[in-house]
Image 1 (tube, rainbow, N blue to C red):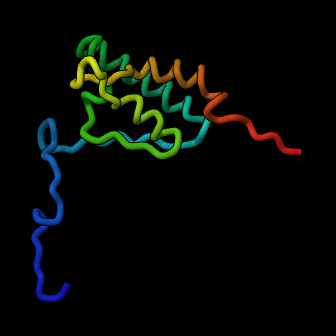
Image 2 (cartoon, helix red, strand yellow):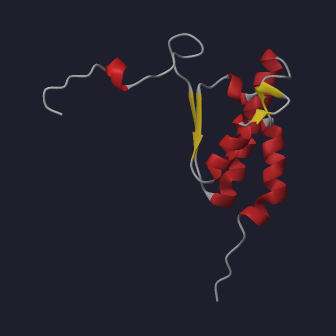
Length: 115
């Protein structure tokens, strides 16, 4: 675009961080059935944060952006989906995501049978 100059603020309209000067990002890797590993770690992390800040806190309270690929995207959706009865709170706690994953993993990621 010759002759056109844009400032960064015109190109990117980014919300300011929730707390302080940092933008916090939680990135959850993919890996199919191995998604149980980040689900377990995130469940532990959330339980530790609940010990510090109260049982109602969720991982989404601590991150400005949560993203994931493949199974990480599934975990992300569950950790950040709003509760229809309370739009300011996530529908699932991390411990719920882990148990959901354990129960439904065989249906979501069926094993391929090689002949």
